[in-house]
Amino acid sequence: MSSQANESSQVIVERARLSDVHALIVLRSVLLSSGDSQYASRNELDESTWRRAYTNWLDHAITTADDESKICVARLSPDSPPVGSAIGLVNRRVPGVHCPSGRIGWIQTVVVSAENRGRGIGSRMIESLLSWFHAQEIGEVMLETTPDARSVYSSLGFDPSGEELLYHHCESGN
Image (cartoon, rainbow, N blue to C red; front, top):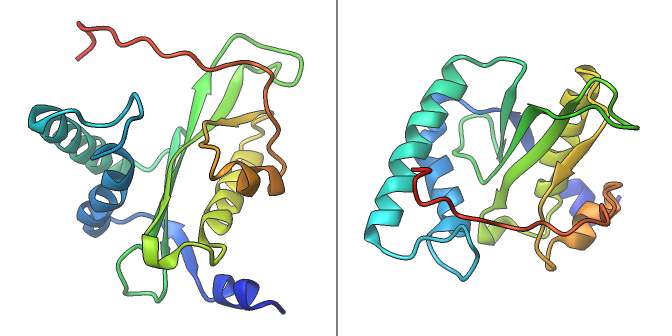
């Protein structure tokens, strides 16, 4: 067994708990608190806005655990704080060839702490979400990626959709 596979097998992937909310915010800040993506905070107001909204969303999503969302965390031991997170969401779309029900899965906010990257933790969380989607008979699962993470997702069976994701910020959409 490779070193990465051995380390990955020791990781616990489970649903997030309310006590994980602070750690989930810290993990997501890797994606939203800096950088040049469309989603990154540009100032202190942006930062406080996403943190407050995400805290409220997490509180609700964790306490109402339903078939519309699953917040996965990865832990190094049963009582340790999360070192990674990934969120699965079920959305309704217009039915398509591979998705006649119109129910598709989205994977978002996949992040692993810097010191734990390269150990297969992200893959384990994605595999957990894919199993959850499969159990719900979801025909398609989508995600957005960066060039750095594309090979990880490709190794898990994700292919380019052939479509380009475009972004438009609606000023009144706050």
